[in-house]
Image (tube, rainbow, N blue to C red; front, top):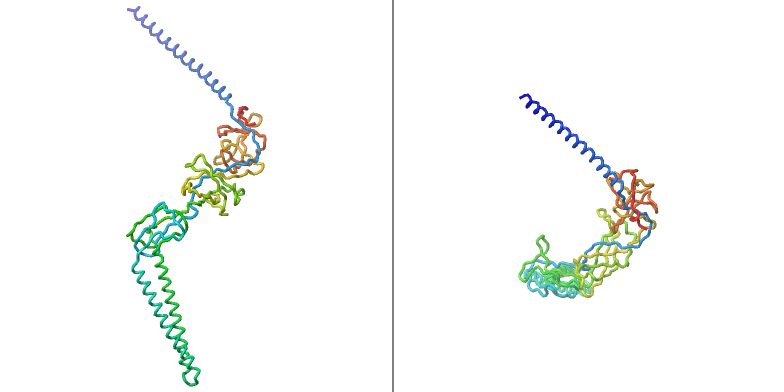
Length: 381
């Protein structure tokens, strides 16, 4: 019995000793693995190289790509000037019209009645004026005989003539105003163009003004278009009237069209810091349509001695804007100011000179004075 207890005690001690040994080996194994792993990470970190470039000053002539939209040189919605009904429609969508052509006719019986009444009043006033004028002539002739007519009667006849003549003028003016309103019953084309929209049909009641008023027709000039572009403030010095501007549209991708700068607004918009310009485009074959999206190329010239770097080389945060300059194998943060940007390049101003080496893709994770390696093969010539 005692022998069995000794054997059990010995087995228990052996198990405890074996467990401690395994725990010690496992702990030492973990510690031994952590050292080589950290060392490998450190070596990998030290082997990282960053793409860099040498700064060059240049005065490149390049093109500024600007989006835009084609517009008709002239376009207008035709509204009725008087309350009336549409009687006839002489044109429809897609019809080419000439200036002064009658497009639609309206009906307004009350207006025609007013016109007739106004004309009758003019004729009545003219008749009264004719009678008073004849009476005045007789009075002046009778005056030649001494004592045949008093001066009071002559003055009264003169006053009657003047009053009746003014009545004729007033009635004529009223008639012309009514006649002008009656002329609005014919809708005519204000310029040569094409009907691009028709909202109403014969029998519809139309009237002037009001939020619910609909235009009868829309006319656009298609043989001459205009393109409006918003030019950034940095390039306003390159804008000159008469400069050729090329552009393309998605409908004709293989073709390029040209126009000339015709008008400059001479006012910079404070919200966009840009100036609006207009380009006249001749479109005799009417291939281009108003509303087409345009990608225009405006020739511009950089300022002499300007330094342009990739936009990825400039870091901006709440405190500063900088590039990372490499000097004697260490990173230096150099504060800069941004200028104009185009085609992935940005103009910078600061303590950066031609020949300096900067990182092509800078970031805030690279600390100041941190040792850094650069990839010489990635530097520009």
